[in-house]
Amino acid sequence: MTAPLIGSIEVLAFDIFGTTVDWRASIAEHVRAVAADRGAELDAGAFADAWRDHYLPSMALVRSGSLPWTSLDELHRRSLDELLDQFAVASSFDEAARRRLVRAWHDLRPWPEAGAGLERLRSGYVTVALSNGGFALLTRLVKKAGLRFDAILSAELARQYKPSPEPYQTAARLLDVQPERILMVASHNWDLAGARQAGLRTAFVERAGEKGPLRQADRPGGEAEIVAADFLDLATKLGC
Amino acid sequence: MTAPLIGSIEVLAFDIFGTTVDWRASIAEHVRAVAADRGAELDAGAFADAWRDHYLPSMALVRSGSLPWTSLDELHRRSLDELLDQFAVASSFDEAARRRLVRAWHDLRPWPEAGAGLERLRSGYVTVALSNGGFALLTRLVKKAGLRFDAILSAELARQYKPSPEPYQTAARLLDVQPERILMVASHNWDLAGARQAGLRTAFVERAGEKGPLRQADRPGGEAEIVAADFLDLATKLGC
Image (cartoon, rainbow over all chains, first blue to last red; front, side):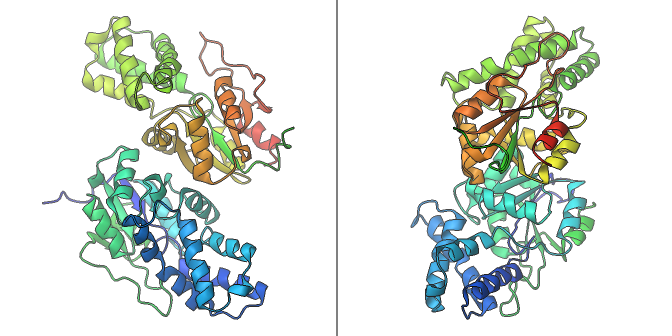
């Protein structure tokens, strides 16, 4: 069937939100800060969860063709405006506050071992970010988080969102490698399923706290050819 | 007229061939090694110069529309095939040798201070590679050379070569900044002229040895708003 995984992999493509950075704690913190600043009463954790609940559905509108290509920043803004209404705090958040919240997604804390794990993995593989975040968002986020990838790739370069095949295929084309020489690293089964369908290999990294205390994080599913506890464990499993 | 340069710049975009890496010495060395391997008599330095002489004319065919988008690897291969005929050594270079030579452009030595200069510049600015080299070429070259940029950008993302405006404009769009907040750093006046025309700011870095002993390197021309002796000098001039 498929070739042995180690030895055939040249590129590691990392999902970012949840896999590499702790979006939930970071967004809750930003929401808390902006709400305090504006004197609004808001459960920041629940708000972060609700915002992220819009994530896949908002991109599905682009994936289905109901919306033309729309950047993640714009999708975040649309869902933010809706949610501020739903949480009955719209009047407390002016334009500047809303912009600040959309930009919060450019500034998310990495998981504690992510930087060290990426350094080890870079020694044996070409490492790239491959996220639904925009190119500018990812470039700023990765820089601010002090992480190092060999290149930034984004769904924006394909003008289509994961798990549609185009972002994975565009990564293979731009890196001039066969899809089966790319290992997609993610903590979400939907991402690995999309990668698999586009011909990539798959590694699941467990991020039990990814969705915070109120939601259940993904458990490794049938799409994962490797399961790792974190990036350091992945490095060990990939011989770095 | 134009805004003061320092303070208005957010992104530094670096040309690669000649500006960041010593293509001439590196290519001559690769040519020497492959020729020795194949028992061919060849003046490697002169061959490197002749190969590079095809660089702008080959891209001009794409820029004028005479050729559809063609990757730099393919353009290098076309001019290589021609030159091996002209140097009367075509029979010594089989397919594998030619592929090895095209790939030589993925493996070029950085100028001695480039890595240290980039590290200093990263502390104050978003730093990106912006070259006519392909995305895969640049990703491999930068990794092998041990250099660090915040992101790799390539003319390939615009499917048009510098100094046409598209690569510069695509960089601004993908990084979500106004063109005038990008400083193009190059050792070639043609590149700075193109950048200027697309609305970017410009810095000339002197690389006196860039074209080897047989050719004259560019001297800073009227397009340069800053002139620096090397990347460390640029860092000092930009306050890093």
